[in-house]
Length: 375
Image (tube, rainbow, N blue to C red):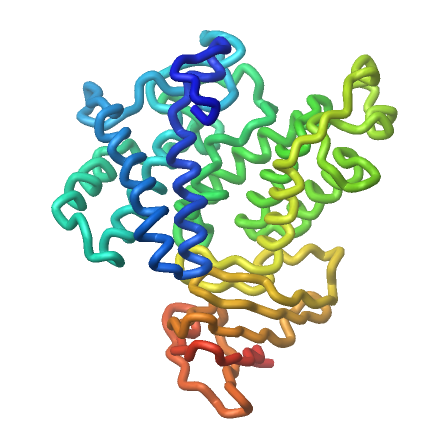
């Protein structure tokens, strides 16, 4: 692991194999935003390839012919009949989401770089044999391969929602049934958070998930609670609620003597959640104000980065986009999730294709494009 320990040193917590795939996602993101092929070839791709090699060895075939992970877990949750603090099992949902994310990006990178064509069928074969996402008895996205009863419905981790965020395998306008199942899973988690206090980073993750589901008010509610109850006066994230917040939580009064511990995840995750409310760019399409909270009826944002090598300024009024400025850093084709809009460059109309609710146009590196929504 990161500290050069080859064996677990804590019961159950350390028996998790998904860290490399999750780190590989960050390397791929760096390429998606910057389109730096030198970085992809020299740093990201070799790491992603090693993560894939691990799964080639680690996955086994079950009695149904599926490729599954053993041992597996859903960090850091447990189920009825399992062990505590973490239940080991066959095939946690997060494992499969991580593998799809890593191998899918690896195949795409292989095409971009023109390398390892002979390995693409191997990686695609693994993807084809993975169990799909499943919907459980409550209509929720299952957390494990089996529809186990959750011992702690309001657990602080949202591991099985990785495919929704930070992944992009569950998208409301492309996979509506899975998006609904993810929403049910998130609602079940949050129903217990009134009494079972989550961590600061749990609220950041939930905020980003709600943003991906297009619910700005729920995303803002989680973000507001993060800032109000899980931050120091200097806005440093706390794992557990601040003492001031605990004073208003009768169920948690016994914990008022706990240490206020800083943990950086929610500072980064909370910032990401705000951006997800204003701009999303996964699946090769830009989405402006996809989850704008009603608390922000008018405003503007400048210098937001989008995948594909774009920088975006946004302005809105009464909850509606009034204009967007897209600066193209690499000269790539740009796709926007808008039914209709005028796109201009230096006051001149730009040729735009309309494809399934998207506006698509070619850009030039260094040029800025103004998008004005139709009335």
